[in-house]
Image 1: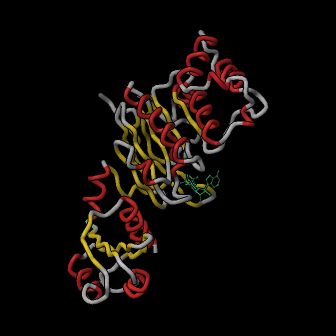
Image 2: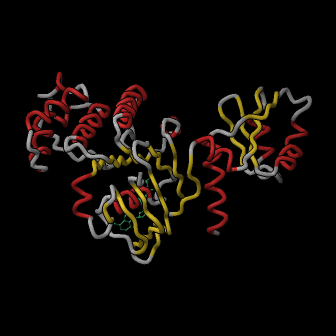
Length: 306
Ligand SMILES: Nc1ncnc2c1ncn2[C@@H]1O[C@H](COP(=O)(O)OP(=O)(O)OP(=O)(O)O)[C@@H](O)[C@H]1O
């Protein structure tokens, strides 16, 4: 089966500055692909090119089998795109907002589809509440209901849970998984590591370039990163002393522990050796976390750019 998103070499420049730089991305049907990267790395710009809202300066591709340049209008109608900012009417109720969106799409079974969306996202009990009075979690739920109303096969979600509390985020993700299980393909940008871990695959970009792609296990494995964890009193002192030592590419305290990472296992071990005896710290080699890997990728990209 052809991938739902299949784009190669996408480039976008704004005023002479290249913000997406030869990006290639594929997402298969029914997959949840997490789109990660630092602020300003080009995620939103990429999403907007994929759904026909921005024309790439170079590169090509298809989305739902449609050409992202030639068929931009058709793509816009067939994807569900949830933007970073809440873009519904705050002075309309939940039901009125959904009805309005249904009219925009000229849905043939408008009332039925609005009713289904209310039930599906547990919004019926609040259907008469004004959108402006909803908490962040409920607003996002309403925004999701609005973007699945026209039954798209692809959802593009741009930081859908930014600023939402953990319980509401978890419920939102349960919903995303329910949709994917029913065949929906999802590309979702996020800065939350726990959300990245709920994706089937992830794509990590920095400076508009794809730096890593695959399952979490693949991305961690391919990074070649080695991580040691230390625990005990004095982790802050050790962290300060290890900073910048040969072999120590990153060191960061995590509460009462620290993580020290590098790609040269021998050099890293040599650097931490003086801290392994008589310092009240217990050390163990651990699997790098996704966050360790992303910080490493980011630092590498910065070095390359410099
Ligand atoms: N219309 C525009 N005109 C000029 N510059 C733009 C425009 N849109 C985006 N940019 C710039 O392009 C870069 C990439 O922005 P983009 O919003 O795609 O990043 P992002 O990865 O989504 O960031 P974040 O995680 O903060 O949402 C940024 O430096 C941004 O300021």
